[in-house]
Amino acid sequence: MNPLEAEPIVTARLDLVPLGIGHAEEMTEVLADPALHAFIGGLPESAEALRARYERLARGCPEPGVSWLNWAVRLRDEDCSTGTVQATVTASGHGRVAEIAWVVGTAWQGRQGRGIATEAARGLVGWLDRQSVRTVTAHIHPEHRASEAVAVAAGLTLTGMWQDGERGWLRPADPQAVDARANSASPQGS
Image (cartoon, rainbow, N blue to C red; front, side, top):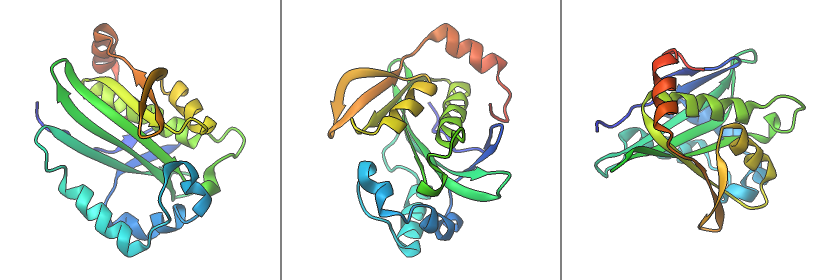
């Protein structure tokens, strides 16, 4: 299978834009709150460190058959970045498999009814469906209830699997559903 490349994804309120070096300055502010890293680990990074990381991501995974896909999540009405979503897509004997993740800056979390992470994750999963990704997984810290709610809203269910202290979530392959979604979805996003 050919490697995938991130493409713009449009949802009702969001633009998921392929992440580039030019996003580093704004993302430094979005990801600056140390509390944001309680569940995802690490510390806030400088613009220089983010530029270096985004440059490395843009070069792609050196491992054949693996696609690193990253997007800046932009809130259209406010014309600002609010976080990121990502997918690592690999080819398996049963089709493509994606490991997804999302992060939304604390300034955009917890606003009643906002649902930015949910909308972004759903948009990402819809795009992956249109790329014939058959299985979607995520790993979430067991105390991160907000991320668990996002996973459920994106169609993933909790599994008994663990990885690096995080619980596994899965949206298994359903060949008929994947084929139907791929045939009925618009190329612009969900």
